[in-house]
Image (cartoon, rainbow, N blue to C red; front, top):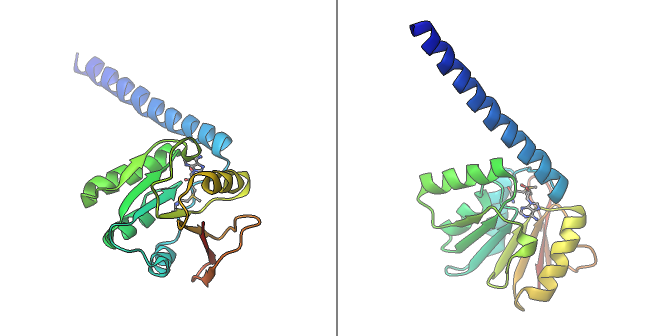
Amino acid sequence: MLIYYLIFLFSFLLILFTGAATFLLLWSIGTYLIVRVPYAPTPKIVAGEIIKAAEISPGQTVYDLGCGDGRILFLAEKMGARTVGYELSLWAYLQAKIICRIKKSKTKIFCKNFLKDDISEADVIFCFLLGRVIEDIGTKIKSSARPGTKIISYTFQFPGWQPYKIIQTSRAKTYFYRI
Ligand SMILES: C[S@@+](CC[C@H](N)C(=O)[O-])C[C@H]1O[C@@H](n2cnc3c(N)ncnc32)[C@H](O)[C@@H]1O
């Protein structure tokens, strides 16, 4: 009797884990096909360098469009900022939510497409994006971000925009713009 019970339990767990793994895999493939930007976190040392150069004032609202595990936002929150992130990759989103809970952070993280949401509350927008997505978000920022909003882009430039500051971090350049 016990052996049947164990076989049933083993089969149940196997189905559960393969189901969850397949779901995560399909979601990741689907997300990549839609967003065309892989999840690649900004190295922690670089994130620190960028936040230092960002000169964030307490009370400012900082957005990370495609926030990964939220590392930039958690550093910005330490500077007294209100922080908001968007992330479509389920794996990265779940990591961000868990870290958020562990750190007892007030950061809001949405599993949503930032191209379809209102970003006009931001004082500072950080992104690490490329290709068509950076062009699309550039158009959206130009049409909906408030004048004076600071835009920070790690590694990739917004095509046709003039940065007011460029810093060389320990890995790659970071571009600072003003709307
Ligand atoms: C290169 S990673 C950067 C992660 C994080 N910002 C960092 O610096 O550590 C870019 C992230 O943007 C997310 N992304 C791309 N397009 C998106 C969209 N339209 N809406 C939400 N997230 C998006 C991707 O899933 C990916 O995880």
